Amino acid sequence: MPVIDAKAIPQVAMDFMNDDHEEAVTLLNQLFSALDGGEKTAITQCLEAFFQHNQEHFAREEEEMVRISFPPYSCHKGEHDRVLAELREIITQWSTEADREKLMVYLTETVVPWFTNHIQTMDTVTAMFISRQPA
Image (cartoon, rainbow, N blue to C red; front, side, top):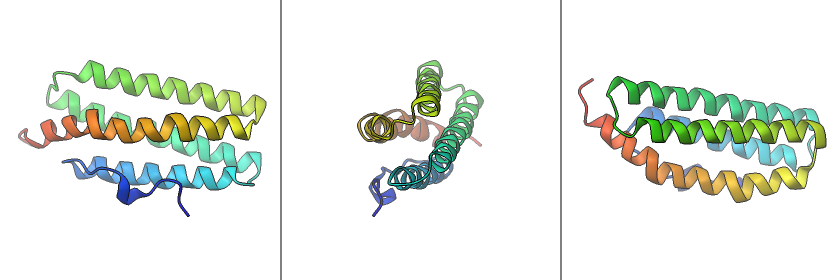
């Protein structure tokens, strides 16, 4: 059973963002599955895939925000930068400690709530603004 259900993730006004969010859910669920008895290498690969996906997803959003001169761009980008730095630190900790419990707590208590909140707030507003601009 998935830890996070893609159908429970709010939809925004931009399809590319919804597609990216769905992919993030898939990657998170793969990571949770790997944590449930998988080898360290498999967990590390899932973590790196999740990190890479977020880098690419955030870059797509940021490109659109720049294209349309989105007024709160720096705030939204700053949140992306903060999350990527935090995730990179967690990956570094995982590579040295391999503490499954610590990683699971981070994912369930930090990543999943942040992900949903970020979509409901920043991404919803950003997508709405982008969707109202000329192509």
